[in-house]
Length: 316
Image: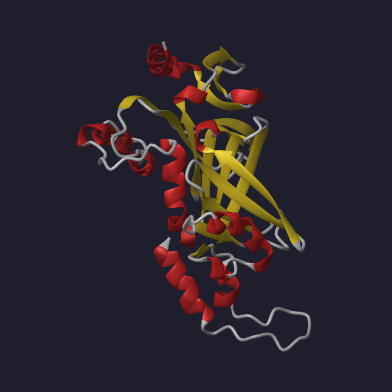
């Protein structure tokens, strides 16, 4: 990702502002930087529209929280508004700009049921699924350039640990669990190793390669469609982690991944059911009727059953 960023910077040096009225007058580098998230280090750095949210905290003598501002994405397929996320101790606050005002929502750490992280090339998103202070289901998505993803690591650690905190390192024996994955996907071996938090113990892990089926045959050439992207499911003593490639029915290029982090105590049910064409459906039921579903081959049952058993044992 760093190399990609450096190439973008080098290429942008030859880009000149447009001389035509109505077209952007920013260089390529300046336009790219508009998609970067920014650390908000003090009350003085807070955009004016959000300032009154922090006044009660500062009036109570509390220090300014760790905060990050994500930009708006106007003109993209999906329009994303400017948001400010902050660590308020036992909850995560997200302020979303709506014109000249904003909407605020706070997500208590103990009520967060899933954190989804998507990273495809330079486009990153974090989706928080939770219940509000009033107990109603809620979710929010923050979007930003992957160059600035390091700013969100403290939030991810806080949400995944539930505010407990950990100074432990990941045990070598838990990292070694994924070593044999290198034969089928070196990328997913590294994805899995990098997904563990300090002190987290791996109970069971499953890796399913991409599942493809023939779609059509033209002039002696067979075209395939993806039924299920490469999928890793990792059960630890704290959470269930799923990692999958971006879903594309056609084409062989895969540029990123999607990580779901689910606390074990937020899983209402974990089940496997039959589907057509020799496929199974792995279902993860969350609070308030939310559900995550993943297709796996029937041949993977012998590897997934121990994962289901390990989950039941930990929840009994």
